[in-house]
Length: 204
Image (cartoon, rainbow, N blue to C red):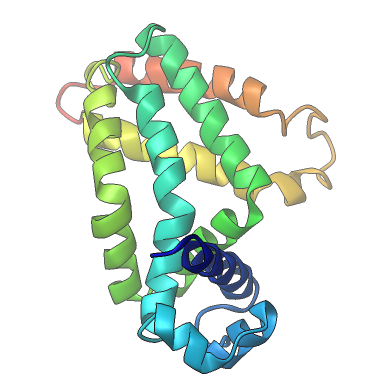
């Protein structure tokens, strides 16, 4: 593909990502995407076979690079100890969901809408390798707790923390520093590691 072709594809993916994030898959047409990038539908079909193919390409475009960044944090070759890497991981993932609205909104929509085919694509094609690496990393930390559960609990803490930010600002008694990713990472790492160290063997 030529440089111009790569640039055009990038423009399409970025514009389509914003549209899908705001409106959802069903409400966006190829014509809408074409208008956003000032291209005809025919030109779009030169790059993508259809809306389904475009949507999958958007998911890959949005998630793959960030998944690679996360996998680098938990890699065995990383210089920090496992506890420090857990804090770094939790802080990075929370900042990611708080700062990258397109990624956060696409993930949010998929989880809420629950389309089995799209969730399967997201899980198997884009996130499975990441989950495997997180699972392997969790084995270093999970103590008596099953490492797959440790991984899912960590992911749940991150997603819940980010999703509740807008609400927590309006709750009386909520700490004004609640939304700090670094503080969240420190406290959540302690919570996870304490839970892992005290988990009942029979239920862990």
